Image 1 (cartoon, helix red, strand yellow):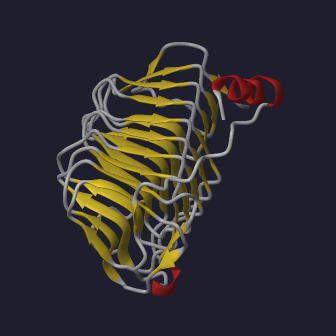
Image 2 (cartoon, rainbow, N blue to C red):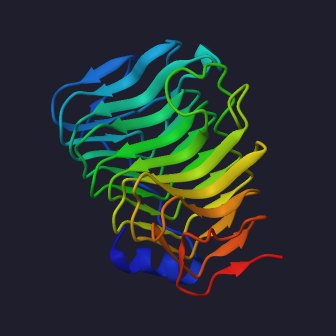
Length: 278
């Protein structure tokens, strides 16, 4: 499809051209699998696993792209007690994950540790029991994902007692994601739509967070020394706080639509244009 046709479809009809399937790639056909060679990997069919710990796809090198071409990476058979990550990497650089439908894991994707330069875009994370998306590392981008129905784990395990749709560490940019229906883990009461930690001068732009469960929930939380994070043009709904800044000056809020009892936390810098739905 040439650029003129693509532009016409967008300008006239409000639609984007269909995503072309990645074909020049290594097809992942069985799980679990560890990727140890740099390159482009893909799915050309749905794949699933019933393992209850470890990971479905592990990445043990830098500069890896995973394109699921819209196919499903499934872990529902492990149940709500699962401790498995759908896609996992630790201390890696330049990991890209796109066009995946990741379902039924403890963490849909967990790019942990040091490193950075990651891109997680245009995925659907559905029915993961603790965290939909976790990305650590400066210069990373989390964009255009649907994070749906996260929560319900019966295994608190290690970590926070708070279910999170999206969680990030480092100077990341979180742009144009939809987070809906985040519910607590069993015996817990707290949920967070988007958590942003250790982030200096990053951005949270154009996201939509709603449908949070639990007795204490926050749409966006800036925590763990977040500083001057730009929170712009988001639609945020949380019963406790729509936007919560743990530290003074941790966030600069502008042009957001907020719905909650708390609205905009006083630690956040109000740059104007923020509307609190009465």
